[in-house]
Image (cartoon, rainbow, N blue to C red):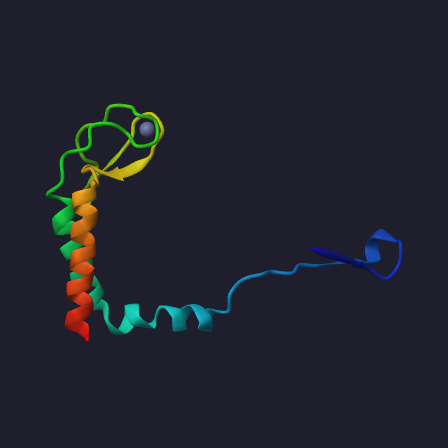
Length: 115
Ligand SMILES: [Zn+2]
């Protein structure tokens, strides 16, 4: 924030607020793929989520280690739970190295299909 003043009197003090952000055009250009290829991105997410929901159930909060149970909502086939102690939001399944490997495999398959 800049403060410009033509004089020392309080009535003549003028404030200029400078805002810093990306122009909307740059953001839209960056996200064009999400507008034009929504089905492709949705299919990718659903494929990854299919692997994720096969993983073992998470029993403790990743943030505070509090025991967690149940689910609060489901989005794109993935159940999520909010920790009662710290309000951390996480999926109810663990992500292990096997799941990470399968996510990478799905990515490679989809990249090959789109080329
Ligand atoms: Zn927690």
